Length: 139
Image (cartoon, rainbow, N blue to C red; front, side, top):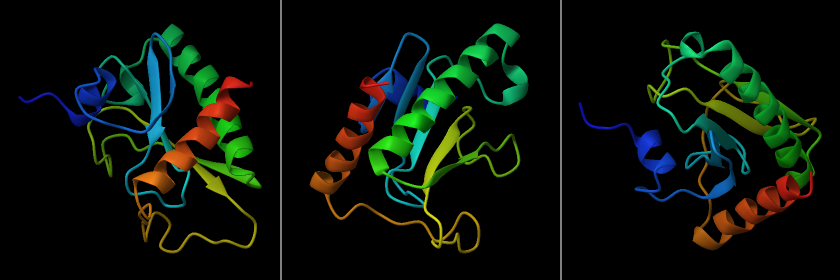
């Protein structure tokens, strides 16, 4: 079986707009964001679902999810954060990932996870990446 796309991103074999990285986790902008600033947090180690985590690694995931969520909230100056994680059903990439999505009051989700959007260009994507990465660094 060919290695998954998220493993390739974690190994830097595939380009992604990274906002955070430590020994065990990496976070990057979603290429088809629900709202701009939509970030994915993944373990560097290939873990398919929440059920496959050890308890210690799961605790570390919770800490890093909180850190990235705080960074997205501050970097995007949004009202709140939506966290989503699919396990098996609706899991588009079979590598565990948390969707960390900026939310503003009065800006509803249409069709829950759709429609997705795109960044205007690489410069706009880089601007959003820097805003979140800088906010995470300051935490």
